[in-house]
Image (cartoon, rainbow, N blue to C red; front, top):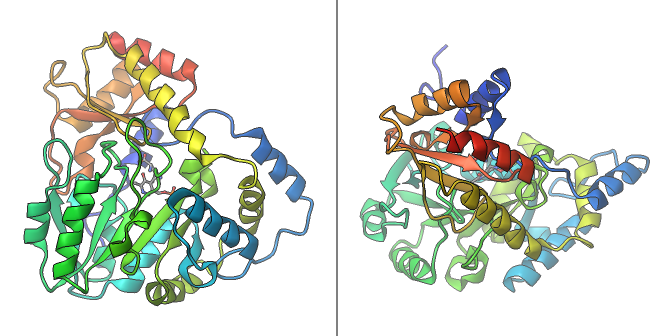
Length: 376
Ligand code: PMP
Ligand code: GLN
């Protein structure tokens, strides 16, 4: 058949995790934690499993959970949302992103995607017969607003931002938002999709959410992920917030894509939100980052700055001339550690001898991996 996505292959996260299993390597590639989930959460699930929680929730989500998310948004960002009209529970941020793009982007629209970027933005744009316009970040991974503005036109429908940024760990500053505001003031139709799945994982600098920017509130869709915030990536649950006129369209797609998200995880997270403190997450991962960086300080890799997320970018330019995909494959085969090649986050697969390690791992795993990495 004629492929609708001819250039799409199996995601690098799948490829590297599979290879890591095959070669019994330590998997620092795909981003997921390997330590136990909070027992308070697993206890809630165990108890709930015997209760009446197994049927469809309302389409947009379980109402008590939606109220708690509204409260979380209020507490975290001082933003008041109406959970009935501005909130949708999604099967992970991935579904929030896909559903939003499908609902809002039309044929021939242009969608600005920053390079490097996470892999799930481009395909939904292509499926809408719209045009992804890739704009390179600066060398230090800050957005190049001049280039972004040049890429904007009357055809631009959406700019996708990811803050904190996967894979580089970069976070946006107040100055970035001022530049964004200037651009948006010139293009009244342009909307923002803000992927904030690592919103609670920032370190020295605080995360600045789109939720806190008044100029964005009526033209921005945010996506969040409980997978990232509660160490439960396999649950595939998150949420999307948008002004009512956009959310109305997003819900139309959602009801035919999934109708409603699995019930028991919604009931469980609703209870867990009463006891968990998302504000501890930054400190938790900062300690992991610092420990991992310390373990690697005598390696031949050069570690890049990491302001947020649970990813550490490292250069192997002093070690090998191989392209980064080959380097990562050999890292698994010869050294027993899996990482992600950064070129896969670029539309033109630009090789810069950079790879990404996930440090969302227990200390023993980080130590064993670091030992191997330091022997290279
Ligand atoms: N956006 C970014 C930047 C990510 O790194 C990920 C990976 N988890 C997602 C979205 C998808 O999140 P989820 O697992 O909740 O679908
Ligand atoms: N977000 C995760 C990462 O960047 C992977 C998610 C996935 O496997 N699709 O590693």
